[in-house]
Length: 494
Image (tube, rainbow, N blue to C red; front, side, top):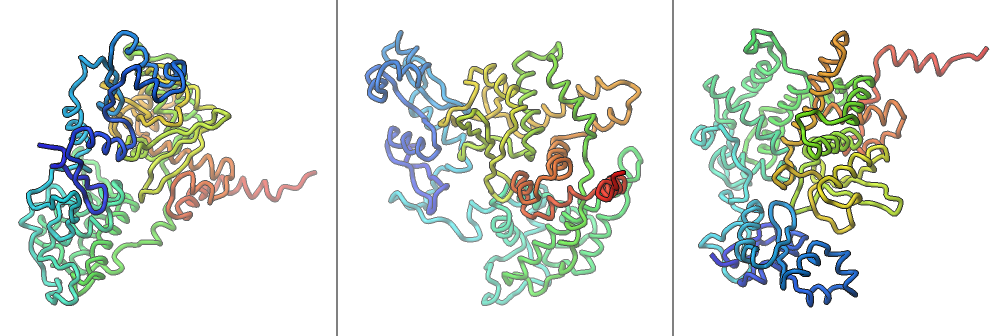
């Protein structure tokens, strides 16, 4: 397969890569924002730098190799640049194919019917490969039909699809494709509704009546026994999110003319549920202080020092950045998250949040020593240079550590902290055993809004909330705190 047999679907319309390997590598370097394959000689190195001293400072690894070899190859592999002597390097074609397959969400082999003039027409029909995937676990034959409420008039049914499966794909593409968090949530709720429908002998979705959806809402709210026999009830916020996703599906189908009616009208509490939401998953200040002390201490005897430094760095970013779990996962195409360092060596963390919104978070000075120590341990400069396009956190294999790995590291520190809690303090031990990364985000928000009275619009921007009402929820206090505020406000000095 030649480079021109690959499509770049990250541009509109999608286009083929250049025909030669060299031109395709240059194209990828520009598209991805980092070098992909470079051949270095001393002549080439001096050509790009004013002096050998500048070359040594800007490309130390390349310079060191060229002192012993005629040529060196710098190439991209597993999320970082590697430099090896030319004789030990993979071929340019091999590197090109590896990078293309690593970015398979963006680059794909061209289909036989794609145009071959260098620019391809984007597929926008209902059978496009770019459509969001159908919910896993839902039998296609069950969903690939229509119910009683599907609009049969082509003039007003603007979707132009023949069944619920295609209509659901279009809904996911339009309403959730810009955010992996939203897509994951919507797919999860569609799977849950489909499973309930199949148990009840109902479906497809376009056949559900208002009474069916009310019965589904009651099923979500009903108490049930888990595997241990403990009777549990879904949290109101969980029920609200589920109903909001389902209501969004039916409202969109009705609005674009796929359905003649909207049986989910008014099903979700919507804005009222958000107004009454109150975060409750907090760690007490004493528990956070205890965790900070554990993170600042010595590594466990069975953990290598570099992995302990990595765990401390991950803890620090969630503790003092207030980010969501997935916001620290590496986005290769966007080179996010990344850190910007100003003239005073202060760090600003840039992340991609919900709704594909970029957010800049100033990191307090107290967290920088742990982050710099980790960078030194993995051979990086203490402060990220302006042109660095590397993951903040790496796995043992050198790749970017994913969301599940980041979560496991934070949970490992919580577990270690719980094991060092005095036996008499069972409440703190229980809290630490239950805590997750999102508890740290809640604690960050509460510190801003309650403890230090940061203005809500500022806190909203730091947390990446779409609505200031969500941020304001952290200001809701218990009766004891409210009484303390009132007493302080109306205290008479003797």
